[in-house]
Length: 211
Image (cartoon, rainbow, N blue to C red; front, top):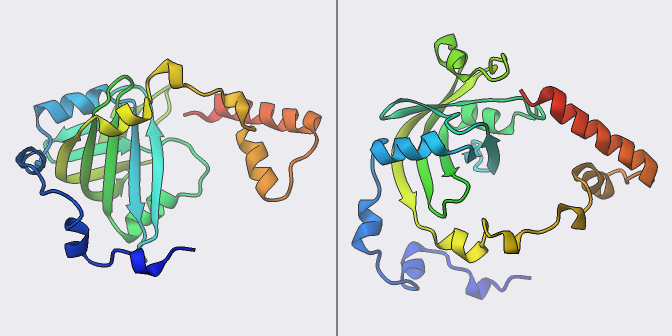
């Protein structure tokens, strides 16, 4: 149980706990994609997309492809291909309800990240989609973001987490498979032999439907 006496309820109280923001942190906010931001996006094979619905319910979705999969259309506009997924369409439905989005671009080996905020829309324009073909497959749509804020994030979080340090890598086998975890928490997982068959089916599905 959280003691309500320790809940921070206003910004003045919040800011009283921290030193003032230094000048560089203020200056790093830019209204458009500059040269270095474009170069960062061109190198990035992975981003996290943050969205919210009208009620403020938040969602974060991973997006990944070969480096440069996000197209910079101009200094204020970028486009993200929507690849096959689970068809829940959480992020896409949220964008229709509330176009405000946040993006976090990540480059393997880089401790710095790039944050981009803006207003998103969903487009089926073939002039955009034809530049996003992978394995001869055209994405169904693109998430087009009108950029309002761009800034580079410092390395502290990645250095604290040792994210790229092989000495801190964990064995995936230390936890159950994705499907087993889901089944354990819902209907219950089957025996080992049937579970192996289901897991093999997921790997085959990855192979067939990645694009």
